[in-house]
Length: 158
Image (tube, rainbow, N blue to C red; front, side, top):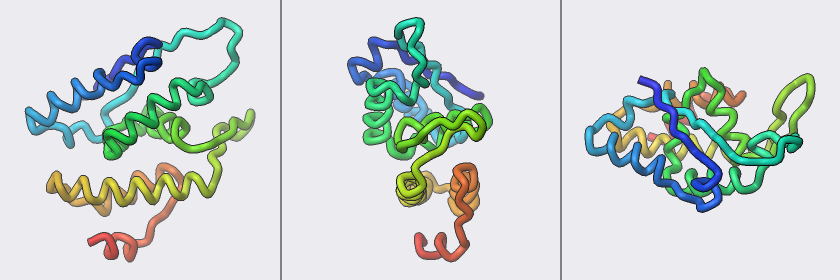
């Protein structure tokens, strides 16, 4: 049931969220949105010079598109495919980071902590609205980004 949402240079440069809006609108109408938990990825086809060494998350236009996506659908993070690395790429679009040749992506620790906590608050509320028990799911998402949240945190959210 996984889905890939295609993005191209024109969509990104115009800050056009219609590929995501089409998917979200259809799934909401069918009452199936939450069933896409960890099933969504992005296929990014962004034109650039052949010798451009930047990672996609280092291209300002692409990052800005993802900032807009996150502002419109802050709960979209819940739908991202963690197995394919989509959660890490999405996080890199929104959190300052550096690439280390041996250790991979290194997020700014303070920025990552703020990002994770923001997602926990947003997703806790959204999952409640969807009628989905959230503590276990949120804990798993936080762990993917290196955070082990105590059960008492989730008690505070209830």
